Amino acid sequence: MGAKSSAGRPRAAVRTAGLGLSGAALLLLLSGCSLEGFGKAFGNFGWPSNGISLQAHKMYDLWIASVIAALVVGIFVWGLIFWCVIRYRKRGDELPVQTRFNMPMEVLYTVTPILIVAVLFYYTAIVQTDVDKLSKNPDQVVEVVAFKWQWQFNYRDGMGAEAKTVASTVGSADVIPLLVLPTGEKIRFEETSKDVIHSFWVPELLFKRDVFPGNVRNTFEVTLDKEGRYVGRCAELCGTYHAFMQFELVAVSPAKFDAYLKAKEGGATTQEAMATIGEKPYATTTVPLNTRRQDSSWNQSGAVAAGK
Ligand SMILES: [Cu+2]
View (spheres, rainbow, N blue to C red):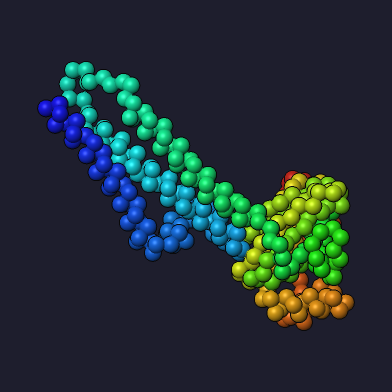
């Protein structure tokens, strides 16, 4: 009897594992075999799906693939738990066989998690390296200058602090600065701050990087793949008017971008240059905050209590 049941147990475990794996494979198949299709079918598993850069899409894929790996392991473990609960449920008052020091099992449940973590680490390292990768010859170089409490964007003729600015846009309390950039090109950002630490953040890039004062020049690159207008913010609390530090990323076609930059180089203002490429001259995703405190904009408890 003993020999028969010990041969049956591993087979049942293998069967449960097989069921779990084929279930996960079936789900993937049904979702159209793409990570994006699978993710969309399940609400992207909480990951922002509105990325607008090649880097953002890679991060999305890593997340969905990690969740699938977790689900496969989860289904397998749930299967084992339920199998044990049913197969070894209490049948009498007799003490079951006590097993200890099962070497193969102990090796298995030590090696398996290490393998899983190693594989997840491997793909994370690949995607992270890719997101952080700097090309030798970026198509555009933009110097991001942060200051209390606005942004200046300098279009440069080369890389590094020694390169020259060919055109620039600066924000004010009244006008949100527009960061016009082309799609499909490698854009390199070089960040520097005039005062304290700020952080350049466009939510749709799924990326932000701190902007340091002094001789630290943080750099990163993105390749945009979706035209449109996206709000940008400062993501590092930098003082009283931190919330005023908004800008707008305007992703346009390379042809439009070239025309825009040419107009700027010719001395046009940002608004005039936007008009020449048929784009709205001011930000559309956000508006400057009202700096003047009035009853209507000063929403402290006093105004509320007064019924205004
Ligand atoms: Cu800031």
